[in-house]
Image (cartoon, rainbow, N blue to C red; front, side, top):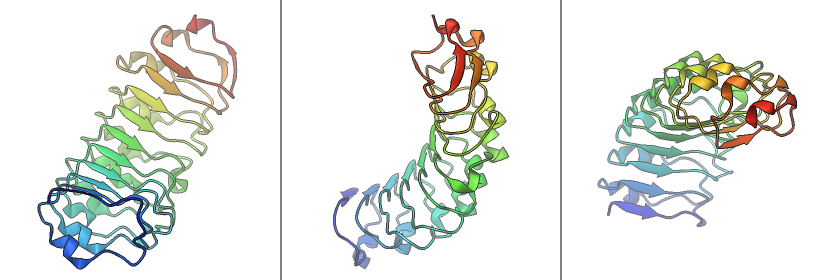
Length: 231
């Protein structure tokens, strides 16, 4: 067996130990399963390439310290597992093949800086992460291969400088992020075609340096007084 989807079931009593004998498993989806903890055994499935643990609102405890043993993992989704606590383990930095990471709407108390070691990341969602609600970790300047970055629900004013190193971005979303400006440097991001800066505190004119660059622009609920650059 190499693919197993068991999401949207009632597995509050846990998973059978035999599941972790499936050492050839490459895809394991356990979203919305009412799990109460992340099973320790999941870290023995070292051939996993994709793991969904999202939307388990009652999942408590911490991420296993040895989660980094999953060095073949390319996709990890922990969105909306809000009862998890503690820090993101430093071992996550060992997941050198990780390309997609989702940690939206979580309550981790720290460890977000370790994500900066994942230089092959292409997609990162860290919106509504209270531990980094005012500053992105400096290490995010290393994420130069990111193509899709989502952060927000905080106060990152005027604009987090770490994002300006992500020059390969195609999609950038920062809703409710307390931003007060749109940096002209984004005009040098040749692949950037989608921005969402909804519900911020951006003032003044939309930068002329960014004209005719984007296909999708979401800047509602700001204090921008001149959008002539978009014409």
